[in-house]
Length: 226
Image (cartoon, rainbow, N blue to C red; front, side, top):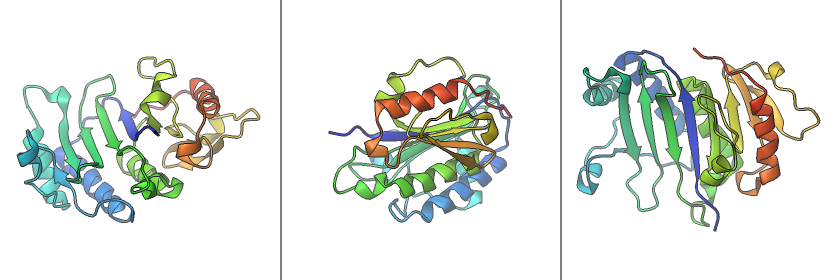
């Protein structure tokens, strides 16, 4: 049975206010609302199942700022602002956001988790669907790097501190001209402030060879911090 995919976007120290993070969050939710295969309503993950079914995410910037401010601990500013969100179903789509952290080692993240692929949710795994979600994450949150991958894809690679790894989709905040395909069939194009690498036409058809080709390209690139 195919493994579930996740989208992970990562960036280092970036101090931002709750207002700035809420603005990014609001624009991100508007982009997700345009993706037909995704849920139209999101809910805040709480401490237990009952609490997690209680608070619907109202996507205004004012409400999102309130949610983010409620998560902030002034005694531990390195944790930044955070919120966990899900679609309130058994085989859920969920994501979490941490932003505004001044910590150095990848403290700021967006992690978007999909359920295991089935016939019923196959539309989530269509290439164009995930490219829309991936673009929304990259363009609204401005990470240093991002991937759309399975845990198995991650584990087949050597993970070095503060260095990106490869997935079916891989984003690097670097100019496309800095990435040399060297005869590879990996698709390379611009996205946001950086470069998108696509390892094959469909996520569920990607091979270990594809991932290793992208990983080789990624290892040669310096990612710009901001």
